[in-house]
Length: 628
Image (cartoon, rainbow, N blue to C red; front, side, top):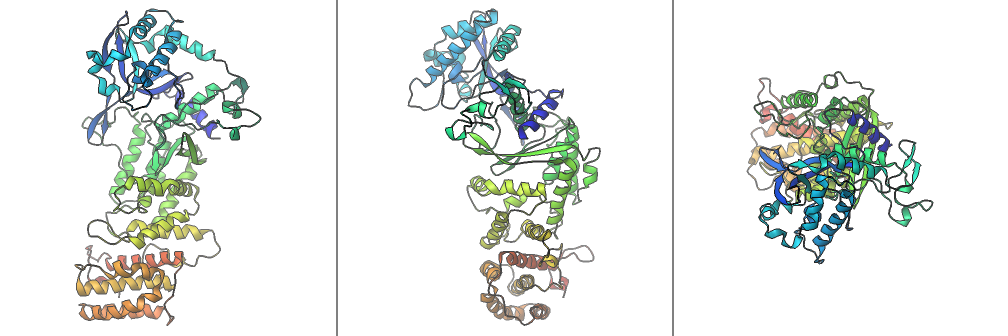
């Protein structure tokens, strides 16, 4: 199903005049330099092929992506490509430290042998110039030549090189192209029925590499691969075990590499080690733009320069998608809700849409999830996700819709020095599972809920840095419990899972959370915020998990705080009301994990009520605004 969908998308890309995608027998790879040869095979100059790309506020140079003869799959084997390879193969130069003293020489000799054999079948002026260069070139003395030494540092960075002859690319030579396509068509492979097309055709023994998946090997990884006895069926190895024709294999890999590349105007979505690509079974590009905007409502689109052009010059322009992203970003910035109907305006909700999550697995790729539904179904599920998260905000400028990335970031302590590594480790499974639950409309993963609760337990408030209980954490706890009990016959916490404070809800966990907020406020009213450690820093974790061991101590302390507070009488009356809602029952000795979430929501709701907007629109922290 995955390969079939990618194969169909390849056909759509081939018909798109704005998309330059490689066909059978070719690859799109980054090329950094061209070796310009004379007709006699003398190296005249090395021409940089970098292009400027906007990265944030600065412009950087990146290798140019070009169509070259299909490249071979390499791991530790020495095997050369045709007319395009790195400096180790074309020039016998490398900066790698290796125990093999002939590391670079072996690769140059392999390139020389492979390309001379191929170019001898062409025999024209361009081919003869390259042959003369390969026969006369000496890797041992290469670094002493000014034409090479002037570019040595950039040549050794590992990108690909190609050949020019008298300023013209050898890859554009009609006779060379014809010879290459003839060689591709004559490759000896067995014929079998293709699993994708159903047509009997030559089968691909090895499939091209997939490049661009986060944390996967830089050389690329395989989506379909068989190389051990345990993977063989009916004594069929490698490509014969899952027969896919060479044409279909080239099609699906080119489509997937395009989705993962910078050529795609709709960037992949990254969650830890999961890279998510998405596409519609349609030539209309606004489907992908709307999908990205829905899942990333907090992200602004690429900033435009004075001429109105998006800074990333190599990214294919999709003005419809850019307009979608800009409209969504402006609504979020203004605190307005997303209009799902306007976002999908002109799009057919019945169009088939695909979402594929990939993760690295040594030299292969693991499929975290593959989901396909009509586009409208995905859109409604994403909006349901935002509706479930909706809760009263701490500040008016906070976004109405929290992106999945923002929720996952709450699992990681801001104090860690190796934040990226911790994100990778903690999100390795949670990111994919969370995305899957959003797109399927199912309960969120329990592991994510546990991770949020653990962060609340371990973090402490630090002025201007981070907080123990945040808007995002409270929103997720509410949404998690809503989804967990949505399809069950009874939801014992339904009345707590609301936007704002529910003063009539008498569940002990919710009441105790509210009570803790009042006790904390009494301390702040009496002592002020300039205190080494508040009761929240010292007692919140214990109060949330085992209230009976903490609340008697806190209530005794509160009497001292109430006596000093300016409005202590009002706080004392409210505390007594909450204690009365417990119906004279003893404090619970333990709260379950779900009840701990309800405790947090009670605390958050009560604190939000303290800072409710006054009638004149000003925010106040005085006790006079407390609803007592």
